[in-house]
Length: 236
Image 1: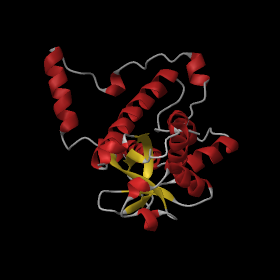
Image 2 (image 1 turned 180 degrees about the vertical axis):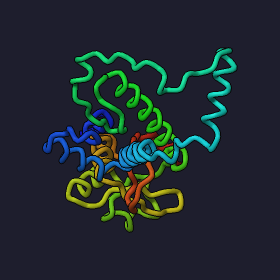
Image 3 (image 1 turned 180 degrees about the horizontal axis):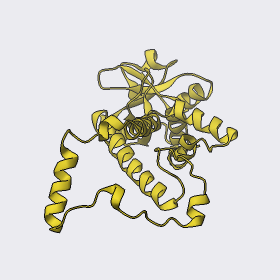
Image 4 (image 1 turned 135 degrees about the horizontal axis):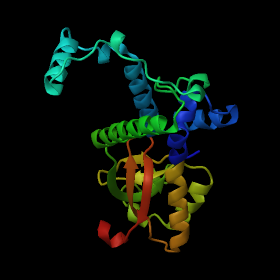
C-alpha cells in the first residue's frame, strides 16, 4: 500500500468498514510512513473534536440574543417551536435506518459524508504541510562509499572505484555518503537500492560523487528520497 491508497482508504478504517486483509496492509504502511501516521492522527483528533459538544456549546445568553436579532430582522416575532407545525417527513426517510458515520453525522446521504471527508482532507493537507515545513527534507552532496571501504578511502574518497563499491554494496555492506567533513552517513534500504542502481547504470569507474535528497528520519540511517550521480569534477 502506498501513501495515496492509505489516504483513500482512511475513511473506511475510521468507519469500521475496512476488510481484515486491507487493514493489515494499512497498519503496515502506517507503521512505516511517518507522514501517513501524522495524517491519520490528525483526522482522529478532528473526529474527537467534532464529537465533543463542549467545543460547540453556545455562550450563555447567545441563543436569546440570536432570537432577538432574527426577530428584529424579520420585523415579526418568532413563534416558539411548540407552536410551529411539524415538518412533514417522507415515509421512506422515516423508515430508513440511520447509521452514524466516522464524524458522528448521519450517513444516510452521500453528500454529507463527502462534505465531511472534504473538510477532513483539507485539515490533513494542512497538518501534513505544517509537519513537512517544520521538518523539511534536506539536500546534500558527497562521495558514495560502503562501510567496508570507508576507512581505506576516507582521506581520498575520489579514488574509490565504482566497481569496488558495487562489489561491497551487493555483498551486504552498509552503503552511505561521506560528507565534506569526512563523516560517514549510512542510507536506508531505499537509498542503498538507488545508489547501487545509479552506479551500475553509469558505467564509469570514477562516478561516485552524488547528491541526495533526504526526508527527516527517526534513526541514524538517512531516509533517501532521491539520489543523483554528478560530475566528480564538481567535488574538486
